[in-house]
Image 1 (cartoon, rainbow, N blue to C red):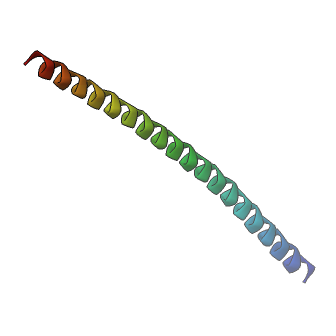
Image 2 (tube, rainbow, N blue to C red):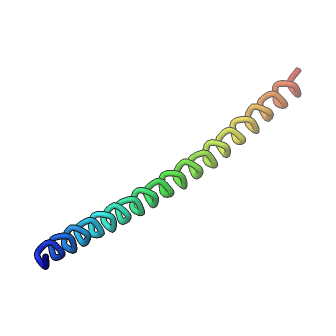
Length: 69
């Protein structure tokens, strides 16, 4: 009987260790996902800035061409 309880206890401990490992891995993946999200938002901001610069230059060129007419 004591052997069976010891085996059950060992099994439960192994399962708990497995769950802790999965929890740790999930936390790592969530952190990585957050990092990727931050990179994506940063790149969107940079693209938005580039689009604004291009639009400003387009306006300046049109204005320049209009003043030459």
